Image (cartoon, rainbow, N blue to C red):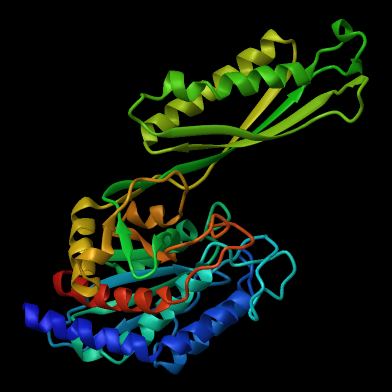
Length: 405
């Protein structure tokens, strides 16, 4: 595609995104006001399905109880079954909103505090733009509105296990996530390992309770737990290579209820984040050895449960470099940034294990944002101007990647 043509397509999509901007804001606010937790997104699923159907994009037979998958077929003469997938997550968090909007959550203890309402609205906006450009689509577009990103095992792997990619065989997949650390109107990309593997750690230490004045007659799980915490949080610096990012934190501990009673049992939980699957496996083994060894030394028993979460999210380097070029075409060079790897996790990583693609940060921040405007905060407040940027960028990227699929 020559430069003049790409400029015309970019301008066409920018104008379309501007025309539907208010409609996409209304969609986002509707979704925001009615958040639904992982695997419970019934209303959101119906809203998405109805909106797509009105565009002439008929949802496929459901692969899970919630979520929507739909295929938009291109009619360009070069279209020969090529498929590019676009994904948005649709679930909310178990969090009470503290904003003062007219569209705040009406569901007690539930909030879209991670931008999934924004992601869903952006992808719906892209679907509307692209539904009017079928003749320019050199292939088909797979819209994946995925449930349950926030709760392991997540919705991505069950969708893949149900045959999503076997059915549609996409040659590429694109996703995006709101970030208030990136200014609205901009996008940031990272080649290679971008987001961490995340595992949940649960430790139960069982000893012999007794009177606190006679600890020698008890087997103290509190003291053993203190040594376990200290030891496992040292593992990163003594097991993981210094050049490999890793985090291990014990963030919760419960045991006992009185000043003069040594309890029988203590429970702890925490998280482990790694950017390398080999380091992840190595730390798993050393964790088990450390917990068991300390328990034995203190005459107690300890059980460690490691609930494996999402794998490392690794953006295909060549695809991401191509994506950055396409983003520059649409947004201008000054609005396309590079970003560093981060230790949060995302189940988009499952798609990238079986399909080339990239996952970028879509800016939702304002120049003078305060620290309360962060992901997973009860005051998270993304700049809605990003909706226009996000839906347009997805639409343009989809067209450009279909050309090379």
